[in-house]
Length: 106
Image (cartoon, rainbow, N blue to C red):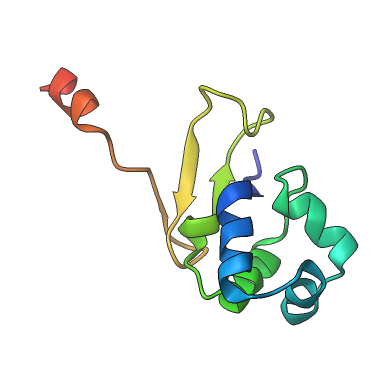
């Protein structure tokens, strides 16, 4: 199944405010239209990796700060496993395990 990228709505909005950009400016600097950016920011639409990286660059944030990658048909549902993308499209790593999960496995 092809992975999909989704925004973390609160984090991307906070980064936009921190950068002092209105939605139209963010869209322009990222090379897209503001009408396309709104559904991306709300997590309803999956942007391309290229666009997600441009948004990160404009906001001065790492990919993991404002986006996550989802494998499967049911993105954004509780209980799904998110695979986090670290810096480059070629490197996929699983999120670190919590101490509780690590203790159970020992």
